Image (cartoon, rainbow, N blue to C red; front, side, top):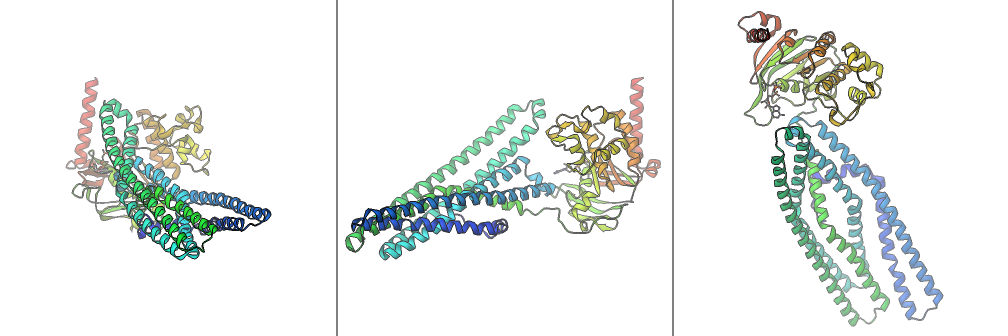
Length: 590
Ligand SMILES: Nc1ncnc2c1ncn2[C@@H]1O[C@H](COP(=O)(O)OP(=O)(O)OP(=O)(O)O)[C@@H](O)[C@H]1O
């Protein structure tokens, strides 16, 4: 009543509520039962008073009193059951929302994550859904039963005395109208407050994650200053929100006081004018008036809470209805084992359209061959790999796999066929085994050990006393960058992908281990289509094809051997420069 939900928000709520129809019907029955008991029991007080006045015997009066008491106890039991069902259904619904929001966040493309920090996401998944939980478990129950109670009490007062019914109806309609207008008064500031609060949490999360660089570059004071600036802004919005909420509450209280005064005055006038109203009936009307005030008062108190819920609902709906740039277009599955990759005039930009990360990229990589990807920092190498894995989709051009546009494939199937070892390896809390298998219980230790063996990493694993049971701390903070890369290698080869992308995959591994790994990888890379991004020319020289990128464009593409032998090619001059540098270094040393 105090929030105006648009169609998409109603659809959002409907989708989640619809799965729990049976429990919701049960809930409604219990609400009706509780209201019926609340309305019916005062009739015994009326009877008690009227019969006592008429001189009825004590035993008859006691019977009425016990019946009243029995109904009151029964109502309490109904209320307890009601609360139990509500909290049960609420947790189920909000947990489902939490899972859906998390799934969406994990699946959204890079442009989404560029705009939203992890901290902000946490605030939405936990904070906003938490508000919804509170709304559903406590407030929805109150809203539904309060509204039903108001309508029922008004009808009953009408049946007792029409004039009193008219007075009460008019007071309630006016009161609810004023309250609903007031409720919307704080909506915008609350939304601002929630978004600023999420932004501040995002800021804090980012700075704490980057604490090492903050300390190393003496940026603690600046970080604190930025945090303080945000807190100040947050405090200002909070004050505005508080002021508006206080205004709403005070006006609400005033409206209630006026309703009470008007109705009591009317009750007095009606009593003076119609002598046929018994003392019991007068008490009954008064009693119903007090019942009427309970939902009205609770609505005034909860009006601000509803605004928080409204804002949370808006933000969650916005999050769930974000249209990812990576579209789920096709449903074909990748069945072939040898995959050819082709880029046709592919262009891509992250945010700013003017700043293209890739421009008109075209090349063809035959199945089961290797491509060395070269280029200066920022030339677009990692972006090319991301496009192939569909972490983002190109704005222009097409990427085909064995002649089919890669958008025709089911996203899961496409991503399953690819393995990537990137520069940023994510490790998670758990055992070494969990981090290698990515929590897939059906993978046996034997399978893991076989892969480690083929990657020539037996020495590494046998040097770890706990072996595969070694506990990895959150974010892999108890491992070195090189160890993380070794885990990533094992993880990828265990999946046995048809396409393999190595993005600066050995940059943190010591030269001796890298040499061993190189030999093992040469075997493992056979019968796969591989893209190797490396700054070291020695790695690229072993590939079948080479693609040199410059500022997002193809500078050169061809068979590695042919490019090496062509004195005009920039690849051969790079090799020349590299060798000259090596030669100079060896001269320096000698
Ligand atoms: N997530 C992102 N959001 C916005 N722009 C990005 C993002 N990632 C990369 N870019 C931009 O796209 C361009 C290409 O970046 P990319 O990471 O593909 O280069 P790279 O050749 O892999 O660099 P490096 O060798 O340093 O890893 C750069 O100008 C970079 O600023």
